[in-house]
Image 1 (tube, rainbow over the protein chains, first blue to last red):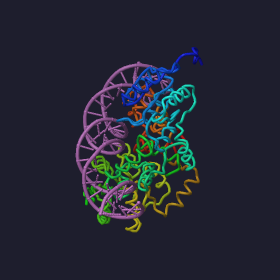
Image 2 (image 1 turned 45 degrees about the vertical axis):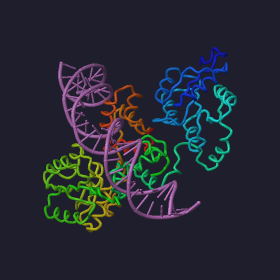
Image 3 (image 1 turned 90 degrees about the vertical axis):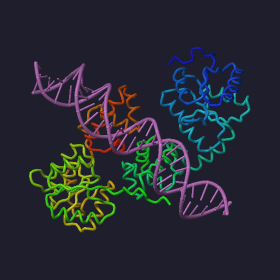
Length: 220
Length: 220
DNA sequence: TGAGGAGTACCCCGAAAGGGGTATATCGGT
DNA sequence: ACCGATATACCCCTTTCGGGGTACTCCTCA
C-alpha cells in the first residue's frame, strides 16, 4: 500500500496514562527526540480509544494501572476498534500475569517505568520501527512463564479454584446461574460470586465467552 | 453463620396427565423430595398449556396418551406458547414412533410409568437440573432409531435465514447484541429480534446454549 | 395483484447477568 | 495465633437478555 511516502517524518505517539505528571515528563522526554512526536494524550481508556481512532498514531504508550478500565482491557478495546498502531505497555508492574496478559492481548512491547530516560527513548524508537521491545528485567520472568507451558493462546486455567473450574463446565453446558446453584446445592448469589471471580481471572467479558472458550478447550 | 436462609431452591413441577389417581400418586411421591414441588396439575392439554404459561414451572411431567389432544401435540403447543420449562414425557408407551416423535418435538426426557418410584424421583431431579433423562429400557430402541438414519440430533439449522446464521456465528464469537449490531450496522433492537427468532427455531433457551451448540457444530 | 417471508425498527416489560461491597466460616501454613 | 485462600451468603446497583407486540419496506411467487 502507500505507507510511508514521507520516509523522514516523525513517528506520532499517543500517551494513555492517568498520571498527569508522568505524562508531562514522558512528553518532554519524547520531544527531545527528533524522530518522535506526541500528538495526543489521554488520562483514561475511553479518551485513549477515541483519540487512537481519530489520529491512528504510529505508537501508543499505554499504562496498565488505570481506574475503571485497566490497560489490558484498553488494549483489547483498541484492537477491537481496528486501531493498528503499535502498542507499548508502560507500567510499574513486573507481575508475570500482567506481562503475559499484555503480550497475549497483542502488545508490541512491555516497558517498566523505572527505566533510564535514554533507554526508554531508544526502546520507543525501536518500537516505532516495528521491533518488539521488552524491559531486560522481564526476560527471566518470561522464560519461566514459557517453561511452565501456558505461553500460548487464550486465558489461563491454572489460577482457578476447583469450584470455579466446576462452574465453568456447567456454564459450558449452557446452564443459567439458577440451575447451576441447584446442581451444586448453593444459592444463586454464590454462583454469581464465583462467575464474576472467574471472569476476572480469565479476563473474559461474559459467560458466553466462557462457554465458547471452554468448549473449544475441550472442557465439557 | 449465614447458612441457607434463602432456600427457595425447590424446582417447581407441573403435572399434565388425564389419570387422577396417577397424578395423586406422583404428586405424593414428589412431595417426599425436598428439592421438588408440585405447583399445579392439569388433566388435559388446554389446561396444561394455560397453567404452564401462568406458572412457567421448572419442570413439566407430560403424559402422552390423552384424549382429544395427545402429548406430542401438547408438547408442540407448549413450545409454540413460548414455555421454556424442561418437559419430561411420562407414559406407558415404549413405542419407537412415540419416543422419537417426543424427542424430535423437543422433550427433555422420556420416562416409562413402570419405573421404580425412587428411580423416578432421581430422574426428575436430574431433569430439573437440566440433564436429559431416558428410561434405560429405551436405550437399545434409540440406538436402532439412530442407525436407521432419522436421528435428527439437536437443533436444525435448515430453517434459519441467512441473517440468523450470521448472527449465530457472532454469538458463538462471544459478542453481545450491542457489538453484533455495530458489526452489522443495524440497531441492537433488530439484533434482539433476530436472536429471539433463532432461539425459537432452534428450540434453545439462551444465547449461551446457542454459542455452545454452534461451537460444537463447528460454526464460527 | 396480493400474500407472505425477510429485514429493519420501535414499544413495553420482567428476568438474568454482572460488578461493587461486606461478612462469615473453614482450613493450612508461617 | 495470625494470615491468606476458598467458599459461602447477602446487600446495592446498572446493564443485558429475552419475549410480547406493532409497523414499515422490499422482494418473490402464486
